[in-house]
Amino acid sequence: MKRAWAFSCIVALSAILGGCGKQASQNATEASSASASQAPVLPSQSASDANAASGAQGAGALATVTTTQLPGEAAETLRLIKTGGPFPFSDDGVLFRNSALLLPKHPRGYYHTYTVRTPGANDRGQRRIVCGGPRRQTGECYYTDDYYASFKRIAE
Image (cartoon, rainbow, N blue to C red; front, side, top):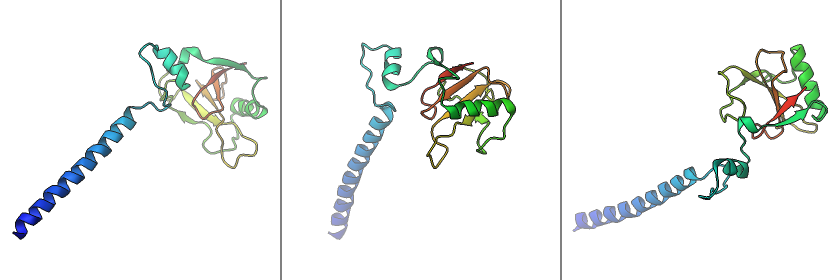
């Protein structure tokens, strides 16, 4: 009798836990299939419309900004890049992988990232300049003020 009762409890507990696991995995599947921007894509929307809705941009659709339109701190960062430093942060000049492919595609090691100081920030902030090609050259640089979510090509 005790064995039958214990077996019934185990079966009931397995059913309860199994159901919870299915619900959790279903929620995880739904969460992983949702886009990072949470912008739904309707069947009538094209891929470019979906990217525009989510804030994503293709490498061919980059906006341009002149050096005079940049914040003063960005102009100072460009000057430091041209002279080779010294840079205010140890992470300046490190490899930028371009994983999201928001910038034109180049081999790994082509892009490097530099911090643009943010007045009043206690950390490095969200502003960066990413330059491609050999170090100390600013011919192909991009500015972001939203931590790599979008870029503007810097026209000198």
